[in-house]
Length: 326
Ligand SMILES: *Cc1c(COP(=O)(O)O)cnc(C)c1O
Image (cartoon, rainbow, N blue to C red; front, side):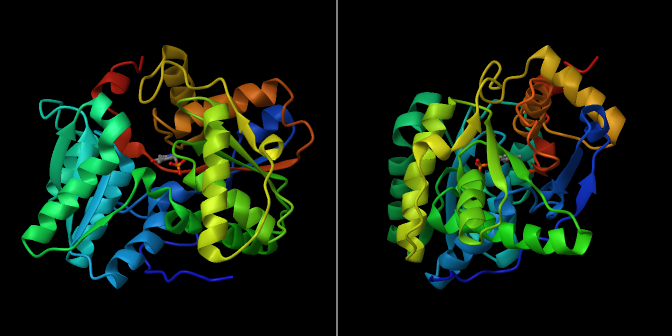
């Protein structure tokens, strides 16, 4: 297997802590604090950027180009990495110049990112072309651009979570725990697919379960198959995955991407007060909410030790979600 190069950006290994939540369900439920991979450079995207940005540096890139929603955690982390490494960043964001300067958008500006706003329609249908155009324009002024796709969820980026399995297996030994299942948020599928392939490759005996926070489970299962294939090609592996074996639990997208329902916000508020851990409204809040609903429905009955990955997102608490806190 061909291993990609890496630069060190994240504070690793991230801590694994036990949640009180498990007591209610007679299980051991743990949380892996990937929200603590750093401060500016924080959350799950950092594990991916360690590999993607190494490739960018190897290609002598001057500018990191990427995309996301206006409150994209990935875009902010990319802007921070660029500044840290003396590169520039150009972010293509779905939103409006007039939107409140807060959260990740504010931080990305503070970190010096150049920002191009596009509409939801342009984002859905044309974001790759728009980023290619930016890259071409840079070339005209003698600069080299490197494009990271949404969420850095391509083969190279997803390797970050392939590798996280190794870290988790080492922590199993240190903590003397054998995890039966890992639960993670699915947003652009890189985290989930990386974990899934890593779990197979290292024979971890841990089931990987995703909870999608937008679109549908079917959509993400297809995406998982595609990315799994790309990863195999990239790394010269031939590990099989069947559609039927991909475990993504649907039903928790609520009102859609980055939109919050009152019961989600109420859940996150209770969780914060019971556990002292802040989830985000866009990703981990919805996923943890879904996870607890599924625990109630007995979906996890066959597992004793479950690890939820806290993928970060604290800067995504936008004004709309904040105002829903009672
Ligand atoms: C991007 C993101 C996710 C989803 O990860 P993917 O690899 O894109 O599926 C989950 N949580 C947070 C906080 C994120 O920013």
